[in-house]
Length: 57
Image (cartoon, rainbow, N blue to C red; front, side, top):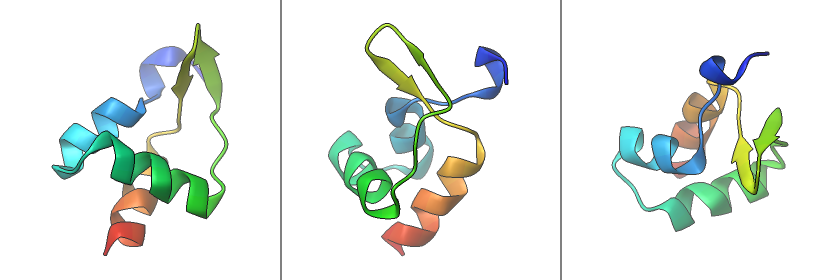
């Protein structure tokens, strides 16, 4: 998977209109692993946004 097809916690949070902390907590709860890393930044598959949205209700 290339980096252009990935999203960060910040991008997910902005898309859903919630805080980064809520997104991080949902990702942790769902045990979603990053598909790549760029430095210390974890990159997630685009489907992660939908999973986090469902988890946040």
